[in-house]
Amino acid sequence: MIPNPSETIVALCSAPGPGARAIVRLSGPTAFAIVTGFVADLPAERRRRCISTCLELPSAIRLPADVYLWPGPRSYTGQDVVELHTLAAPPLIELLVQACLDRGARAALPGEFTMRAFLAGKLDLTRAEAVLAVIDAGNRNELKQALAQLAGGVARPLAELREDLLNLLADVEAGLDFADEDIRFVPQEQLLHRLTRGLALLTLLRKQLDERALSGQAFRVVLAGKPNAGKSSLFNALAGKPAALVHTEPGTTRDYLVERLQIDGTPIELVDTAGLRDSHDDIESRAQTLGQKQAEIADLILVCREAGAPHTNGAATTPHSGTAQVRVATKCDMAAAGPGELATSAVTGQGIAGLRKLLVERARAAQRSPLAPSLSRCRHHVEACLANLRRAHAEALDDSPAELIALELRDSLDQIGALTGAVHTDDLLDRVFSRFCIGK
Image (cartoon, rainbow, N blue to C red; front, side, top):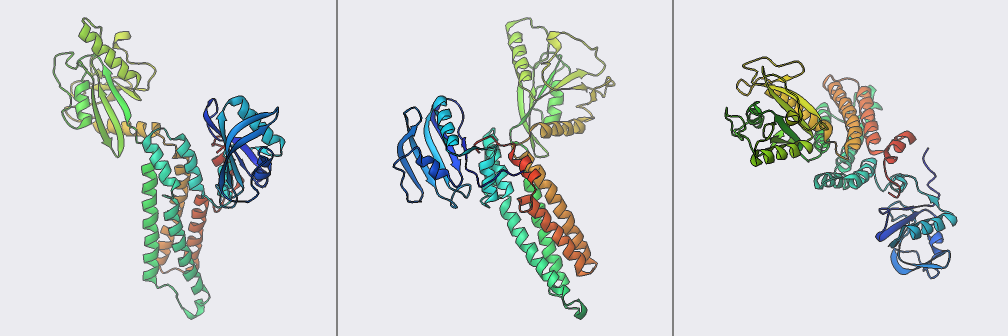
């Protein structure tokens, strides 16, 4: 159930804990009245402003603060909004929030401020989901993608498409009133052109969503195994160039090598390490240490074994056990792979394409962007809308009755409405906004 938007809510909307500044936010019809209880000289004039003052809290505590006032409807939530910026001393912040609650405010639920912005029409659902993605962004690329969606990167093309389809539906349905006279407001050629344009816009939007579905951080894959197990040859085969030195002499690779790849648009960082074995000198020991460290920070380890070579166990020949592993048999042009191993050959190319595909699948499964839940929901509605427009296009090509085309256009507009939140349910809003933290 959607919480009552007529109640005034309060929450700490900055990071909890001690610091230089904390922000307590209120939103609702009595937000200004509640703050008046702390600030005796609060101006009666309702306009945007910032006031530097002291908050009069219980127990005669005077807390210095900057009070920001945003009268509705020109505010984030569309309601009266007040922010109290003060010292981030947890006991004082708890006292301040409790004082707001005592004066009639209610503790905000997760994402309730952004939900009110959505319900007030300040944000559509794609932008509201982008707010959460901005908060959860783990790197610069994820932040850039979230900000692009927050700025309307999805909403704007959808608004354009919705306007086009509404106009087209109006023209198609206008002709229904003159069906007996065989009068058409949209010639077939123009109808097909406008439907094709809608399909093109949706196809571009789907591509945009696919590009944003993954984080830009490279998926790190480490090749590990005994000396002369064919790691460097496999490394070169995956990289598509002779990046690593290959020699029949065991232990040729002493340092680790890194090659950054783009496989089907997915960034993958490939790392070739020294062969796992007992070290006999200081240089060998350092090489082993470097290889183990790379295995510890890997997203995936390719455990390489020369096909036909005996299986060995032991700490010196076992890569980091806490990381996901795939067992790969190399040199399968000379012998067969063992059970549970992926057969490869750098000479014949056997298994290389399959291994590259596996790396892409693992990378895409692991590198989920903060926008992933939003993009997954968006893609569902975009695919359904595409299906409606394709059927409408097929009906137009067959010169089918206008009623059938109008039905598909209406269904496509329903999908766009569900995507932006123009059509929504309490359950959908609960799933979206329950992922937010309190205060946002």
